[in-house]
Length: 191
Ligand SMILES: Nc1nc2c(ncn2[C@@H]2O[C@H](COP(=O)(O)OP(=O)(O)O)[C@@H](O)[C@H]2O)c(=O)[nH]1
Ligand SMILES: [Mg+2]
Image 1: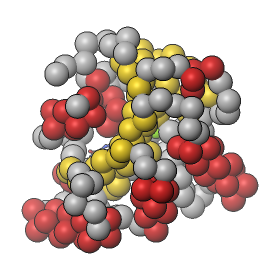
Image 2: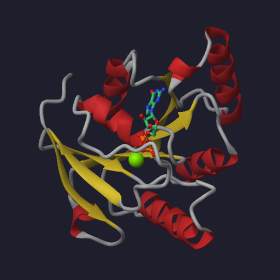
Image 3: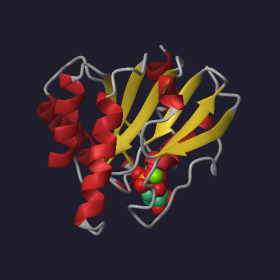
Image 4: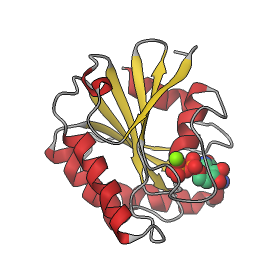
């Protein structure tokens, strides 16, 4: 399966018509700077679609991209970035929770992205618990594995499996540099 067309539709910060669109939505969530926007770009094969940044905490709205006229990719702001002021951080956290728990969205899948070097953190586990409680279908991406040695990759996969402790949840390693597992991720998202 290949993505042929991807376009930015709009960015929202709260209730908006687009939420009630009957198309499926695949949301990218994770801490700031883990590579959410870069992963989204790498899946659609367009390096500049979602704005990626080396400065964490830049995306502060929920961005909708229409993929092949049938699915939305939804780029959520990153949570848990220490340098974002507390009030703003809480606003972002609430926005993410609002989006994930909003029940009107018909088909929702989530890609939870973790920086493989940092490993899965408390904020991520909070997200895992929320996704489980809401019965949202999700996969976990251990991202930026180009920064790890082979032994470290094996270790972080094992640690993540232990912390998530649910065999049904797929854990997939990725790097936007090598793009190995790109087809596997796309397969999981569009099955
Ligand atoms: N080494 C490496 N760097 C990456 C990878 N993916 C993203 N980055 C870098 O990580 C930084 C944050 O990426 P971005 O996509 O903006 O993260 P976001 O805040 O989660 O959306 C940027 O400087 C990217 O170039 C990857 O797979 N490997
Ligand atoms: Mg981003």
